[in-house]
Image (tube, rainbow, N blue to C red):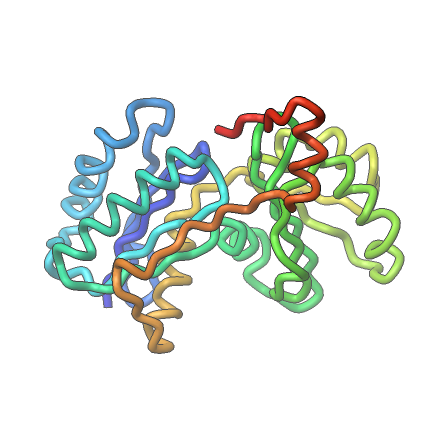
Length: 242
């Protein structure tokens, strides 16, 4: 069973191929250049490198976000086109879930904070305990998230929190200064995600989750209406997002 996967939501964009859950190849994609023009060649190259024909792919997989809105749209549209063309399923995997899997393949006793840079001083964030997501993903100021962790959840646990993602890397000093010995940084803090997305998608496929390409939905983590109203202020202009 072959899966072709793609992540364009993070600064370290990548693609990968896995056979029966074992990654054959993972290759980086230069996200700072024109991504839409690079993807066809990058996907063709990894198929050639892996000696796999496009027609042999059983399922396609793509990161659904959160992350760069532009990268997210391009990545999903590219994989939708391939999946439609081949008549194969397209499995979406949250970048936050993929980061958790990279940080701690063994769930028991793990506490993982996945932070993706949302720009302008915010991060997209999710907290995982023993492999399960606690609550819903949020977009918030790093200092507010750390205050909440320090006030509440840290008191109930003795194990450290591992932080991962480009948002965690960007605010590494703040994390360490606020949580001190309770904070750990994953190594690497900003990993490529296509390989783990391919492995997670393989599990979904084998469990019978084989959605059609049109069913894919981006994961946009947005602020509540009340907070957006507060941020707009009296002049009614909302802050721009990338």
